[in-house]
Length: 359
Image 1 (cartoon, rainbow, N blue to C red):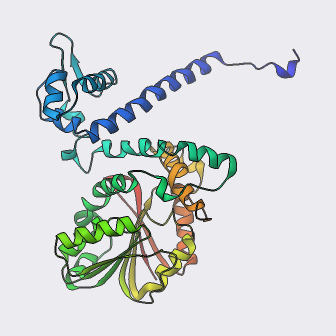
Image 2 (tube, helix red, strand yellow; image 1 turned 120 degrees about the horizontal axis):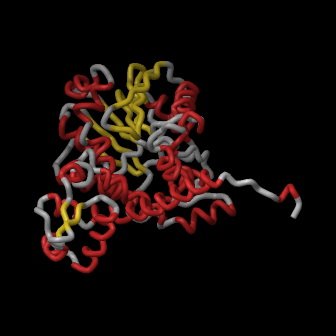
Image 3 (cartoon, rainbow, N blue to C red; image 1 turned 90 degrees about the vertical axis):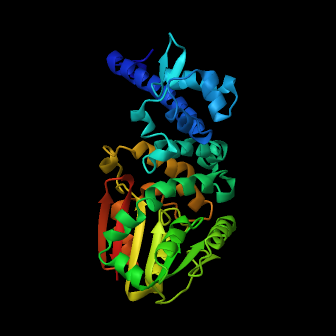
């Protein structure tokens, strides 16, 4: 064998990496089971129970005992629940329930755990894109809007009035008095509906590209009998309103647009001269080396590769991806015409930046 073919391996480094890979396998498997625990309500059930057998837990949750028992095996060996071998009982510590139950919202990380299962469903299509380019269209993502709505309930709706809106000085007071607001990429309209309920003197409009999301929003608004809100199926790159709104909002909606520059230009044109653009978008840098200490960087790059980037590329778009970063975001806002840009962070939300933007 030639000398050039000989590779010297640091055995300690190799062993450490092997241990890391085993940890990744275990944690990846636990992520799937955490998602199942959330969807089936098992965490919610266990948080209300004293240490119990798998049979009792299954009865209380209304689930099949054999599946519950196997799930508990993963949860116990993974350190998520505690197991008493003498009593053959399982329990969910209160300290763990504080991050895994619906009552724990907006701190329920089990909601976010669903994403990897949702995105794993399109893995074959993503692999094909690696080989042939292009992207995966929105319609291939099962449960996407369902999980996105649940995620938004935690990151947007729960803190909306106490934390998000006050980031812009005077905004709650303006909404109370009465202004005209637009949510671009509104999804199922949860945030906008809450605002319409809270601020009856203001009028609200929601635009989204997906007809099924808009229909859900309309139905929900009708349930509350709201007459100060409307929803329309509209492409953010195509709307042509001019100096119409006092407030335009986007919640994690810009980075996966096919033509984000045009979207931002449309927002600038649609705002009144003294209007405000409130943009929530993914927290991160445009440069990989600045994200090395980001606690969720691998997760966010994965979400980006398997959804945000590819849905844009599927429309022959720019493919910014979720980790387009603060630097590029600010550059694009300035290119759209905005001169005053403030980037804020909130302690409850390690995933997003909040951009307070004026002309």
